Image (cartoon, rainbow, N blue to C red; front, top):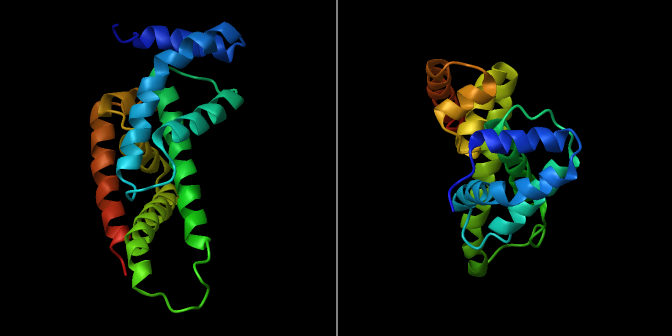
Length: 188
């Protein structure tokens, strides 16, 4: 079976936005695999043994998407929003894990060493999210580009389409934002 055309997915998104329930029924299987790829890419960056699974992340994001009435511009815009929601879900999950008590002020023994790497992964995701939020205050466009590229897995061309920018502008902003984030995240 061949992949659905971008135009067909866009037509279904617009029909869904206009309240046609059959459009959502037809759209769901067409976008599920792509959403699954985005979720899998996110979870590959997570610690091993993460309790949130790919399908769970896709389902949570899709439920949130279905509850919203957004003015979908096109297929790339839909996947950009989906990626943003997945990022938010994972960051919220990581923040919740960081605040869980693991024995309060008790001394942790060697058994806890296995959890150190997991906490480091959560801390890295939270640190990236914090840095991205700082970037958003400084340059919202660069922050959005990073979100769409890194978290959404969109190509330069797709980001340009979503944001109504030229490919070269997206490429330049992407490179600048990555340098800024790298510097921000390595500050002590």
